[in-house]
Length: 249
Image (tube, rainbow, N blue to C red):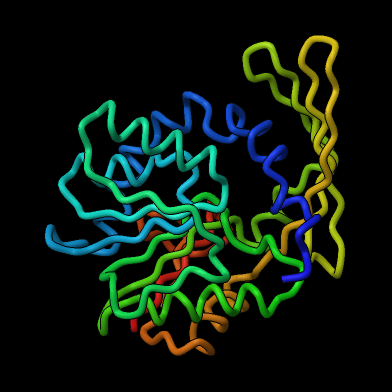
């Protein structure tokens, strides 16, 4: 991999944004989101689940609370250490692993793979995204299912805001966005201000339409590919909140 200096490989970026990405509201939402995923995928109690790009483990831990066998994978060591500590504190059994999703592959090991919260499309080379999907196909048992939940290109364009800001405690977060490559990528300049400190990071994420992402699933071998507009299984139409794509092996 030739992108070691890219934003998604910078620990400082992920550590800075941890309290922003995983704020109290998002942590509180984990239980409901997991219940929706379990219902949508009809997950059975003995299914083995991979939470790909698990962050600090909010969904992995909730799945474990509901009695599922879970493996959580993330590239950020501090996130995985935090997740392990939470599991220990709550007396939950979860296997947390530091790993790059372009390389993580455990053939015929899981019934379910989930990739939630827009954790896809980070890489400069589209073949890297393709490799991730291939890895997940290989990691599933026959009949297993892979779910990606992200912000679809159609939704991004519909709700596009060139600038916005938010506050997380004593931290001010400013964002400036620009579409590139005919909406194929969104570049965001993040400015984080805390006290007298000001930090900037520029992030570029590939955006997928419903057709593009579902086609990628099919090209990588998935069958019965389905598209939804949220985790409740509603249609992907003009009112869609998220892009959810599910494929079966």
